[in-house]
Structures are given as C-alpha cells and as structure tokens.
Image (cartoon, rainbow, N blue to C red; front, side, top):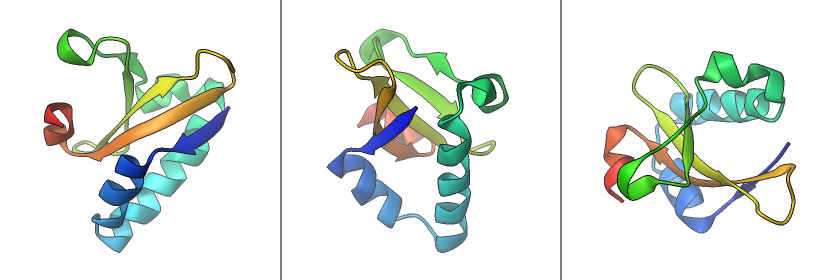
Length: 88
C-alpha cells in the first residue's frame, strides 16, 4: 500500500509534538502492510465522514484516510490528531 499525504494532513502532522510525529510515522509504515490493519484497528467511518476510514496511532490519536478509487493500492491520508479531527 502506498500512502499519499494531502496538504491538510501535512499541516496537522507538523503541529504535533516531535515524539508523536515519530509514532505517527511508525504507524503509517505499519499501515502500508495490509496484514497490520487489525492491529491498527482500521475501520470505516459513518455519518458525516461516510466513505472515509481511520486507524489508531495510540489510544488518543487517529489518522483519517480514504482509498484511491483509481489505484487500489493507494490511500490518501487526510488528517491526523485526536478526536477533534472528526470535526474538520
């Protein structure tokens, strides 16, 4: 799986503390291997975020993403942060 970073994701990522940035990078690397999806708790979102997915970085931090419609092995990372990212 290839992970592509949207500008919003990059902006939010840069605002994270350095130690959390390191943890996010580690989880993205795990996400690239579909076998780790259960460990990362990848799941579909509903409601206003229907059609998007997320996975856990840690107990508090999540990454919201969507799969590419044209390339099945690509995912677009949309946002990273605590549960407030569901409101962006």
